[in-house]
Image 1 (cartoon, rainbow, N blue to C red):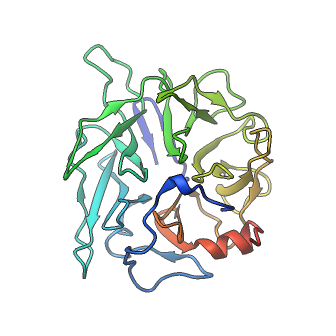
Image 2 (cartoon, one colour):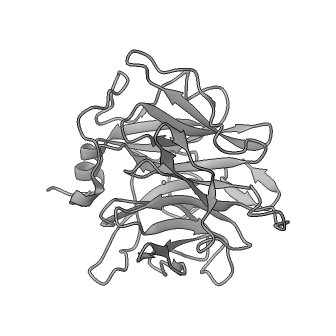
Length: 301
């Protein structure tokens, strides 16, 4: 399954974490069985249906879970809610316009949801492409979606993740890159997003790099690379560490504990940083994050 975004066509993301991330670390009740050294399907029958489900994003309190589903040639964001005993049947996330494709939710510690959508930026926008948007939690309600104009272009932007300092990482097929799809960062300076910068040749290549997951302190970047020679399948998850000069090390394959002969993509972490989530066509999976850190990334501290 190739997860690319084309204009008008849909073809079927831990060293020491920043204290400023302020994540809830005690109150989340996860479904059983919980994974340890082997990745398991997450919420089978609710998330993993007979359709293509992908993405994994929790509200900060862990009581709402958001994912995406391929539905009628569109992408639909869904929400399931934990009532203290059970998770609800997933329903469309209605604060966004479901007439358009919406996907790739990422939720920050303050509850803001970043996502991608084909919604037009305004009435004069006639280019049908994916942009990055944000919607903010205001008490029990959500704000109107806001297009993040500083990072978007007339090309495709998708799969956003946000560091604790606000720096925003995403994928795009915009011109001027190294290949078909590259990974970029837009730094947040004085509350404003700056011009996106390509992460360079240690991360990007002549092929496709996508679905960046930046860890809160920016020490680790996990991404999907398509059809690399050391891969286990069509697309695999890879990891990189940040250097002292703010570049990243060359991406290394995460191995067979994570990757499969299929398409592995959409990495994310739980709000308390206990579990690592990813999509493996057509399922959403999870695995213990400390195990992943020590045994897969080789971090023994």
